[in-house]
Length: 294
Image (cartoon, rainbow, N blue to C red; front, side):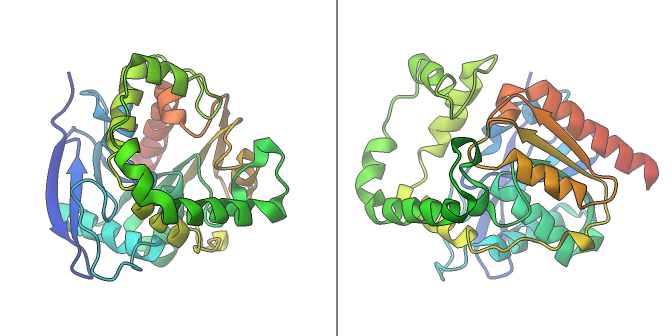
């Protein structure tokens, strides 16, 4: 049985209407900074009745029920931090553990650096604290100097052609065969149950391609966070075969934070599907540690 996944609207600092969501489960609060353009269904373990944490999160600007900002340039990490703060304020949460996945790891670390009183711990899954595009393609042996230009170039091309692609991509059938292909593609590894993947992918494909790539290029401008300012308990969970976030870069980041944990799993960028129980156990361990020491 699933807890009641509840969506609701709030207003961010610049007046943009944001669609927030919560699992309404019992337990300590965790703010989830999700992967770019993704949705609640990307975290199946957090939607279980026994999740053990009360998640508050939101859909990115222009995604799902969140509106696009009047100023279309306000879609980078700085704007995402404003949205994260609006979610916390609306929920009446002074501080909590902040979880991030993919580009959401950028948001989590920047939030901790700029607003340390709001962050009691950081749980980073398949993401690095800034410089995300320079971390892409490591398992493909792409030289580091070429990673960001290639990634940005692809995003720029898809942004320009997205209006042609989206009418097709948004109508793609996402059935059992599609799930099997995705989870055996190398981009994603096999998962115990493809139905949860299909639900998340179906929702993801509703975001216009050009808008998604616009957000991606804006997010790519986010520099690395100075980790010397990070003093809260931190856990990194990396995928050995992740082509979007280098496991090596995550390990070196963990080494620069006193007491940080680094967990390497045999997986891709989608660890919360492939190793749902293990990732969830690591989150609960961090939350339990934070709760017991504060």
